[in-house]
Image (cartoon, rainbow over the protein chains, first blue to last red):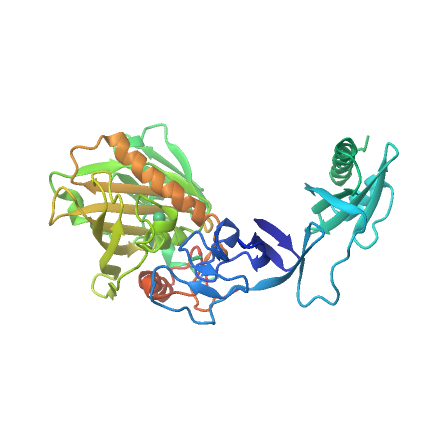
Length: 193
Length: 281
Ligand code: FES
Ligand SMILES: [Fe+2]
């Protein structure tokens, strides 16, 4: 699937055996977006000419030349991926520390908000700390993990209490949606309700 | 900025069969133009400021130029051969560089992945060696002895065959494909790709065909080609960068891409750079 990182668009994928990988979203052959490709076993293949790449980014096969072993110089830029607690993290460059763990919280869903973090903070009435925003709506606390995609868009992950029941999870999800609407209104310069 | 030599070339701007007195508004290399049938029955093309532009009708299309064409439109002798059916496929708009659209047309290695079970299928992915040259006399790029296994090479083909192709690039945004003709061994079907550059990253693609095929209904022939081009569009709108990189280093060609390598070299040599980028970015 396509995703964004501070280093540009990435193709995020998971091998058959379950390992996650993040590639620069551009095939070195003719520039096709790798997020349009397909996973076969432990490899990601480009949809244009079928070149396939291992999780480490090296090219394994060029279908137009089946007998050729691709030189090691043919490779896709990769980003470091951590997969834990139901959240996939990518880091640009070598990470200094492992990603944070959110004890007692489970990821519920992700949504794209057409607004920057400042508008989200204004909508929530609180400040984000370490990428986390706590929002209280109708006496219900929701924790939001924010990943900025440029100035005007944010990918927002909703985290809910691990022990919450389905009804509470639906309520948390609704609360996040209402926050999104308010933040988008603010970003558009409209009046928040 | 240096004047792009592509300004003096001929470009398709309309189907000849759709030419009427009312006219069609379109664009050529960023300039709005009007194409209509004049009182005398000839095509009239006017530029943004009302100036009359060169115009001619050939191969099912109206052709025009923003500059001063130094040569008449290239010849396709086969198009005048008796017994051929001439097929106006119509137009496909693609948000890509006009040069990327031509390069994709010259490429066979993508058939099994993009035109799966039509023009190619795994495991038949190998591209055999073929010949590529820039013919100096004609000043054209040619690829010959191109062979590829195809499950259904043309509307008139039953089952899989190894098809032989020749590709020809007589102008920066036009290419002609000669392809084995199943009902008439010894003759070549002609399939062309005429690209109208609307902007550096937007084009109207006008495929056109001259075939030996009396059987297949016209709508099927048109539908077959449109299916192919719509599949190509999903690729062309997702290549990065949008402009065709003419300098090596940005992309990695292999032996299968020798036609594309020659095409890029030929473009660069002539300064045909509308829709291209010279430095890696
Ligand atoms: S562009 Fe990816 S394989 Fe050719
Ligand atoms: Fe194609």
